[in-house]
Length: 192
Image: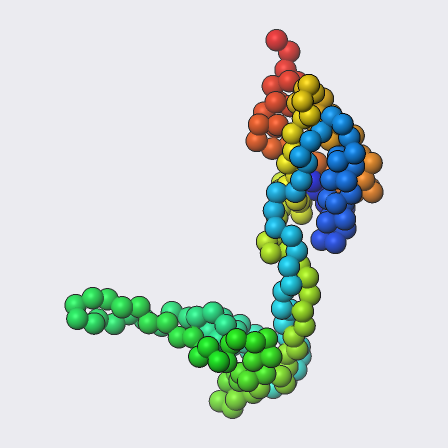
């Protein structure tokens, strides 16, 4: 199932609801092995660009993005022939200039007048914790929850229990069934 943030409460509220739901499910004898199916939040480097400062310095956002991409990632330039084989050419900053988050202070971006402007003149960086991937389901921020019915409990009963547990969460959270559970709900609602 997908636990959804219908109210737009944000990532932290969705993670708190996820944890609360898993805790409630762990206390219910009708359910077993209920867990989230995904990666936990991890440290991420957030780069804040002051667009007004960049604009005042004559630096475009496109050039800032290109510099970030090329320095920390790479940029495709073209192809060349080498002994009858086509080789791709990529540009990337030397490793010693992209190993640490503070290395961003060593970079420069060309402004509209051809001058070089240091990144530190318009950007700051900080560490924060966030999701390694953005999950959405039917248009809502969501997190996948998986689990099983306890031995001797029907899957329909286990699904009913999960629905009742979601209703115990703070307002604004809902669920959608997926895969086999969705098909079971769909077929179980049909008359013979």
